[in-house]
Image 1: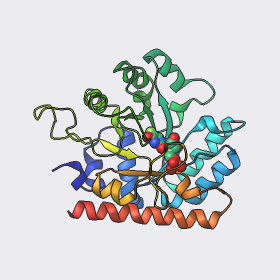
Image 2 (image 1 turned 30 degrees about the vertical axis):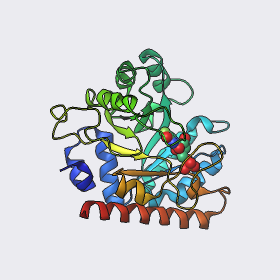
Image 3 (image 1 turned 180 degrees about the vertical axis):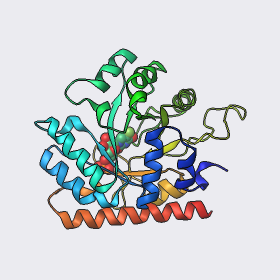
Image 4 (image 1 turned 90 degrees about the horizontal axis):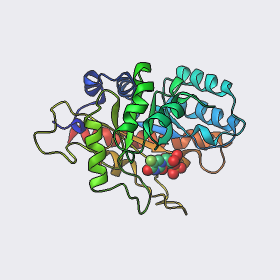
Amino acid sequence: SSPQFRTYAQRALHHKNPAAKLLLETIERKQSNLAVSVDVASPKDFLAIIDVVGPFVCLVKTHIDIIEDFAASLITDLQALSEKHDFVIFEDRKFADIGNTVALQYSSGVHKIASWSHLTNAHPVPGPSIITGLSSVGLPLGRGLLLLAEMSTKGSLASGSYTESAVQMAREHRDFVIGFIAQRRMDGVGAGPDEVTADEDFLILTPGVGLDVKGDAMGQQYRTPREVVLESGCDVIIVGRGIYGKDPSLVENIVTQAKRYKEEGWAAYLARIKS
Ligand code: 5FU
């Protein structure tokens, strides 16, 4: 059967990549397919939000280059929260350059992403060499890569044959590419019937999730957890402003929203595996 009708626990057994295994096991352990995207500039707010949502999420997604006055101690604090609350870390870096450059951007510079982020992602636009570059750094560390097969924004160019090529690239690098940022399942996309192996099981992490609004003023589009997980077969819902809203100091509201999205995401998953 398609992976979308299997439990997260069953799927964890069949993944060899340590980051994929960790994510699936964490989802099962915490009964949460909710990821929170913490897109705030203040390091203090960043850590405070993560500490508050930590109990409810399987994964925290970062844009580390948003943080003002970045200090290496922030990473130590983030890792301590990841241990305390049992969540996976995903730096949403969206690499998009030649293999040699992305390998340096991933390992070095101010942020040294590979040293702390279990998952990162890349645009497939440069072709397979971007995977070669990133895997030279990430694979020995047990990291995993997601390819951006689709985007949530209005007018996205990542569609049709571009999306199909992204899936083909992933199929050829199953050790490191564990799945996609996409809006739907990618099982069999772009492949003839003989090309899809029985054990093909890509993780689908999906941004553009919101319960109260349909989008923002800059092209973002939101769908509900039910549409994303039950109807489109995605595995993880990624929620940013829907959870921390406009004021990161409103702790009670953040807790309420995190619980709400966690429950909606899990109910959609339970309905999916029953169908
Ligand atoms: F790849 C993508 C995409 O297609 N859409 C996105 O929104 C990534 N994102 C990220 O998810 C984006 O950079 C934000 O960090 C987050 C969505 O935040 P929101 O506040 O829930 O809209």
